[in-house]
Every structure is written in C-alpha cells, then in structure tokens.
Figure 1 (spheres, rainbow, N blue to C red):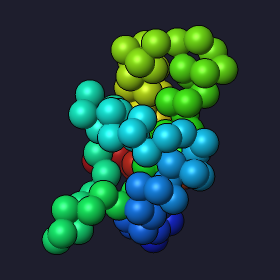
Figure 2: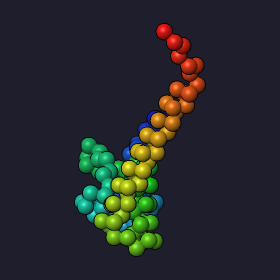
Figure 3: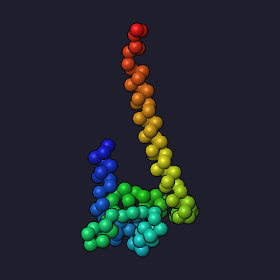
Figure 4: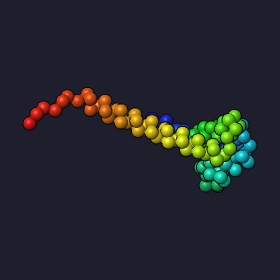
Length: 111
C-alpha cells in the first residue's frame, strides 16, 4: 500500500498537462492554488508539478463545482470530510484487525 501511495504522490505533470487532463484552464489551477484548494509541488525553477493524487483532487473539485453546483468553499468542506472519512475507515480497519487477532488467541489459563 505504501508503494501505491508513493506512486500517486509523485509529481510528474506540468500545469498545462494537468489542466488538460481535468478539463480546466491553467489559470483555474493557479487560482485553486492561491485559495488553498491544491498544493502542487515545485521544481527548483519554481515550475508547478502535479501528482496523480493532485489530478484526482482536481477532478473531485471539478465534479463538486460543475456537476453538483457546489461553490469552492463547499467543495473544500466536502474534500475535508472525505479525507476524514478515509482516516476513520482506516482506523476501523486497524481496530477490526486487532479485535480479530485477540479473538484468535487462546484463552489465558488461570494462576
């Protein structure tokens, strides 16, 4: 799983390609960065680079704003809620695995 996450976090798309991939104008991506919705990486020359995870985030923002009619503030709240849900789902998975491990252990014998 860590390898998959590292791959999706690897910045590799310049702004023109990222904008084309999500169907937005490059100026829109710059605006989203200014208002704090996205945080592309930068090269030494300060060129923006977008990761696959950034592209997915941009697609979600576009879906919220264009398809669902949500404003940018609402899109930001929705993204934060989705991230929190992902965190909670991971916690539930971890706790369920711990409970299952405890259930598999033989009962402790008396003193």
